[in-house]
Image 1 (cartoon, rainbow, N blue to C red):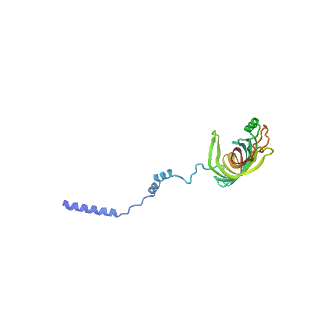
Image 2 (tube, rainbow, N blue to C red; image 1 turned 45 degrees about the vertical axis):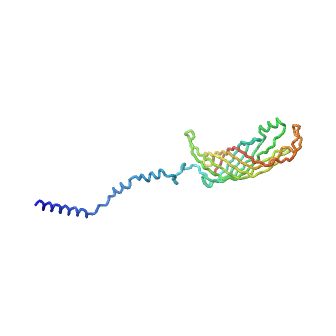
Length: 262
């Protein structure tokens, strides 16, 4: 009797399990799906954080004063740095255009008002003769402009100063005088230019600009006195050719001015 009852119980349990297995599994509710979508993707976050470069991100964004597709005009003045014979003032002007925030082109002109420096005056006072030398007069160059640096700087926690720093590389012409007794001889030479500049913007249309400019030109040189000429110190100039050949001359100048941005 017990065995028969146990057999009936097992058969009834098996039948109930089979009916339960045939019922469809309910779909996940909307609240369950929402909780799944809110799960943080840690792997994706790590990949973005350790990415070598994010193309959509700039170190300094929202430039207040832009240069792209704008013309500018600079007026400036300064002094020569490394002229062994002359001192004075150099005046200049630049006209340029920027294609974008990095690259531009510039036409520059410089004119100098020079005189003998203290070294020349001391030499003349000691030996009563003038040294052989050339005198820088003017130059013009066409240059390519590259601006790799742009920054914002706090001034005494009162204001933000916007400035950039760039390089200019150009080709042009250098005009110079060969110092000679009875009247200087004017000549010109092909020149190369390498400049470093920095400008500080204080409005949309005006900026303060400083330039450190190096130029190189292959200049002819000649003796100041005519060979065989009697000298002021009682001697006589050496005989032979007056021509001293040519040499590469480097002129360095520092100029500061105001730039107007159109």
